[in-house]
Amino acid sequence: MGELSMESLQEGLLRETRPPRRMDLVESLVQGIGELPGDFVESLLVRVLRDDENCIVRHEAAFVLGRLFGRGEIRGNLAWDALSKSALSDPSVVVRHEAAESLGWFPEKRTIEFLEQLISDRNPEVADTAKLGLMRMFDELKGSQRGPE
Image (cartoon, rainbow, N blue to C red):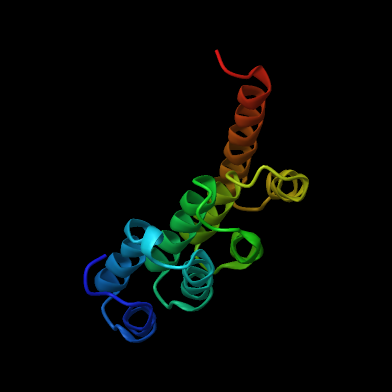
């Protein structure tokens, strides 16, 4: 992670004016997760997902939240709430799509119910992504029930 501290990451993500640099900082959270508290990383990514003005940066935050939860590196409570809100109401379909896809890493009853509702979303990309998220969860659940091969 180099020279970046929690404070410099937070400062950079919240005050950096160039979206490509903010995207680099979001990605650096994935690479430095072992050196930073998971709760800090999760809350910072949720803040970016909720507040960043650039839809591509928000998309990247949604992607990273799903990846980190899928790898067991964040608890996911804040992430699930933020991803579900973004999947429903972000002004960008790109963010809504990625939030729905990232929820596929949360194999919980509430996720299944949520994604089943999103299947009837007015936007076909979001609805299709909700289907894919459900398929991912069901495939993962089937694989875990088979046990080691």
